[in-house]
Amino acid sequence: MEPILEELTEAEALALMERAEVGRIGFSGRYGPIVLPVNYKVVDGAVVFRVAVGSSIGEDLRTGIADAEYKVAFEIDEIDPASRTGWSVMIQGAAHHVDDERERAVVLRAGIEPWAGGEREHFVQIKPTVISGRRIRRG
Image (tube, rainbow, N blue to C red):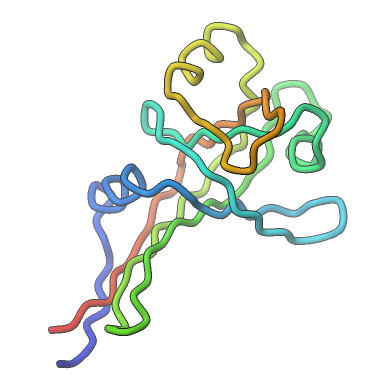
C-alpha cells in the first residue's frame, strides 16, 4: 500500500492533541534554540504544563516586559515505525505564565501531575494562535 500524506483539519488536530499526554515545547532559550519534552493537559483549548519555580524553562519563557508573552511552538506526535504511519500536530502561541489565582484554580482542577516528580508548582499555558497537523497513512 502506498503512503498517503494528508493535512489534518483544526478539529482533528485538536482531538489528537487532547488524547496525548507528552509533547515538546520549542523556544529560543538563553543559549539558543531548545526543545524539551513535557507532560501536559488541554484545558479550555490551551496546552498547560508545570515547571519548577525558578527553573531555567520558567525563566527562559519570561520576556521581562509587563504583559508581553514569549512565542513558542508545541508539538505532539504518535509514530508507528513498523507500519510507517503516524501523525503530528503543532501549535504556535504565547507562553502565558499562570500567575492569577483564578486562572491557577482552573488549571489545578485539570490534575496535571508532573512525570518528572519534584516540586513543579508553576503553570505555563499556551493558547494556540496557529494549529496545524498532518498524518501519514497507508491507502
